[in-house]
Image 1 (cartoon, rainbow, N blue to C red):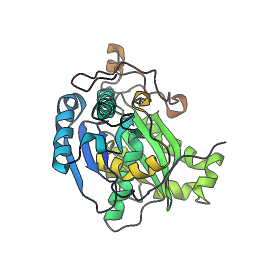
Image 2 (spheres, rainbow, N blue to C red):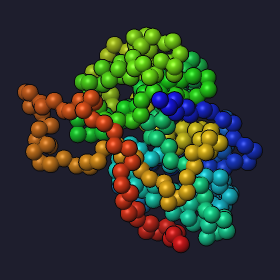
Image 3 (cartoon, rainbow, N blue to C red):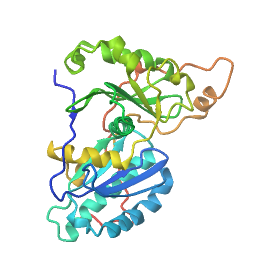
Length: 312
């Protein structure tokens, strides 16, 4: 069995330049920088989802102008590939592709590399960074959560070690009432014992840090936590911090190979399903984690490049 992925912090090479785009939630986040601690960062935060398609490119141009960095001098374009908002993921992917292709038209041979990064990994790193910036020790286990709507959550579990974040379980859908049992199963799995390095599953679960945007909708997730859950979103600055290590590990792809990862294939509910989830004395239980396997990357869909440099 292959080892779980490890996302290691790596100091950027001198002069490295990255553009990061995160639009997997209702918030659009863009950042420009080297990914190095203490290095300058140019950033923008604003409304995401459908609005991101109109504001993303102008804000990218504005940040490049502020930094004085021509597009073709970037080392890579980093984007959050999902899971998350279908519209936001497609927008970020399309813009990342268009910018990568556009750099070729500006004289960059082969265009720019693209770094697709899991949204939940960016969220886990934001949680780690937030705790450490507050002067506390980073937790050993981070449970990253995003609201998937339709009565479900996106969840991924990470182990924090000195060499970086180890993915214990990849992103998948889960019903809120099944989340605790699913995370426990992840930590107890025999295939993860090496990554846990002797950490007892019960202890890991009780001391895990839960982070995400799900706690207002599902307040029961706040109870019985040794560490106060953090209400956070994945950010473009987290993508910047991850970028040097991912680029060094060979995670970059050509623009045409950059794809969103939806996890859920279904974007909307039927009328019957919406009625099923409306408040009632006995709401119908959603399908549990155990029955919802991640689909990975969905077949590629055409991505609009309106207003973007066209592919040759």
